[in-house]
Length: 173
Image 1 (cartoon, rainbow, N blue to C red):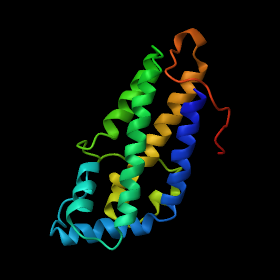
Image 2: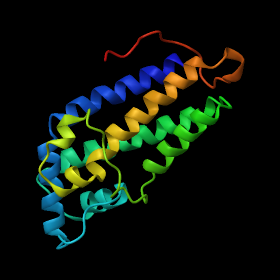
Image 3: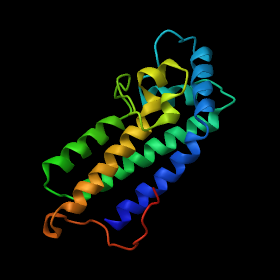
Image 4: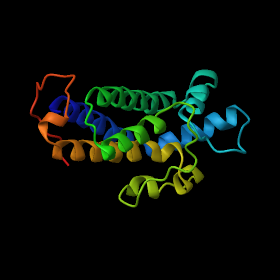
């Protein structure tokens, strides 16, 4: 479980850097849509961001790659969570939600970060106001934190660890 928390902490640290560049991310999405001549529909999936990154030159490609890398890290974390079979209905629901959200083809247009994520809510683009890829990372991080919290409340015999506990580092909040 400590390994899980450490990986989640590392992703959160990466996300903090990404958060500071949210406006650059929005600009990169907008420029990519312009280059693709696709300004009518919103960007609604990780796969769409990947396609824009791969096929349409963008001066802000680094921020798009940072988003995709963070999504890939979240996907790998979901795979690792599966090795920690808890048998709890709550943790299984949370894990399934995370796995669906980080799937490249999932339509994220209705995903909306909660009010606590002020950086997301104060962005001026439609994706930020109405949900979508901009809200994906904070929503998945919140879901994974809930998974960890519920898993820690379970009796030890219910957790079947696929990892040795090598770290006791906790993530700062």
